[in-house]
Image (tube, rainbow, N blue to C red):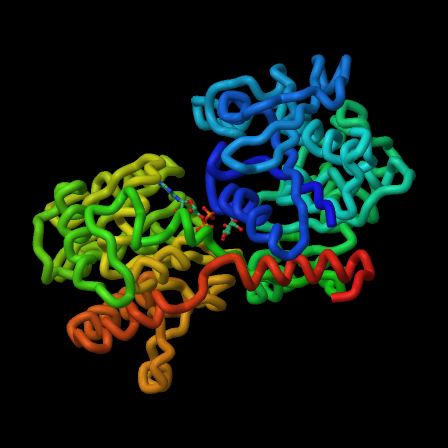
Length: 477
Ligand code: ADP
Ligand code: GLC
C-alpha cells in the first residue's frame, strides 16, 4: 500500500510541536504493516540543508508567485517529497512565523502551495508514483482534499488527521483566485467558514475519513465546548470520525541508552534515576537535594497547556519541592514564569531537545495541566522515563494515564495522577495528592514501574492506521 503523507513539520528536520514527532515516526511504524509512506514537506531551509539526493520530479514555472519544483529526497531515513519554492519557504524563523514572532503575511499562499503540490502528487503527477491513500495533517495540508474535489478528476481516497482543532487556518475570501479556488467553492458545503476560507474546515468537509489523535478528543471536538466552531460539521460527519492515539518513538525515547542522560536505567534499576535528578538540579541551578520532590514541565507556553493556572501553585511547589520548567511560546507566560523564578523554581525559555530528555529522566513528577489536549506526547515520554505524570483529565491525557485512585492502586494498574476540572484549585489538590504518594516509597515505585512497563510505542496505533487505510480501500483486514 502506498501512502502520500502531507505535512508542514517532520521530526527530526523541522519541529514546533508533537505534529512533527507524529509525522516523522508514523512512516517507520507503518512499514511493518505493509504500508509504504512518502511525505511531502515544504522546502524550508532546515529541510533543504538536511536532505540527501534531491532529484526534480516536477517543475512549476510559476507557482504561487515564483518558480518551484518538487524534489524526491531522503533525510534521516525518511522518504520525502520536498516542495522547493524559495519565494515561499527560504526564510529565517519557524515554519509559521517570522523572527518577530508574527505569522508570515503570506501563510495562506505558502500552505495552499503545499496542498496544491500534494493534490498534484496524489493525482500521479510523478510517473511511477500512484498513491493509494493521501493522508493530510492539520490545516496546513487541509486544502488537499478540497483541490482534489474541485479538480473533478480521479484521485485516491483522503484521510485528514486533526492534531489540534485550535489551529484552523482561516484567510480572507478575497484570496480565493490567488489560491486557485473558484467562487463556486465558497459555500457552506465547500471551503467557506464563517465568511472566510477555512483550510481545516475544507479538510473536514472533503476528507473521506477524519481522525484525531485520541478517542476522547474525538468525542470532545464534536461538542460545542471544544469544537471551536467546527463541532457541527464534525457531528454531521461523525460516521467517518475516529480517534487513534499517538505513540512515541521508543528508540528516540529510551532511558536505557539516551545520550542526553547522566545515567542510564530501566524499570529494574530505577535507583540510577537519582543521578539524573542530581544532574537536572545542577543544570537548572536548583539546590541539589535528592529528597525534595522535583516537578518538571516540558511544553509550549500557550493557553492550551494551562500553565497560567499552574503558576498559581508555585508557592506550594517551592515550599515543599522544586520546579524545572522548559518551555517556549507566549511572551506573557514567559514573563509570568520569569517573575516567579526563585531558589526552587527554575525556568528556561527555549526549545532544547537535550534538556527535555533530562527533565523526563530527572523529574519525579511531570506536570501537564492542559485545558484541552488532543493527545499529548510528553506524558507518554514521562511514562517511559519513570516520571509520574500529573495531568488534566482531558483528551489524550485522559486516555493514556490511569489515575492513582484507591481502586487502581489496589489493582496495581495506576500510572499517574489526574485531576478535573481544570483550575488552579484542582491542580493544587492534585499536587498535594502527588506529594502524599511520593512519600509512600513503595506506592511511588509501583506507579513508576507501571508506567515504564506500559506500551507507549507506535506499534498498536500504526496497526489502527493501517486498518483504516485498508478499510477505505476495501481491502481485507
Ligand atoms: P504540542 O504538540 O501540543 O506542543 P505534544 O505533547 O504533543 O504537544 O508534543 C510536544 C513535543 O515537543 C514533545 O516531543 C516535547 O518533548 C517537545 N517539546 C515541547 N516543548 C519543548 C521545548 N521547549 N524544548 C524541547 N522540546 C519541547
Ligand atoms: C498537537 C496537540 C498534541 C498532540 C500533537 C501530535 O500539537 O496539541 O496534543 O499530541 O499535536 O498529534
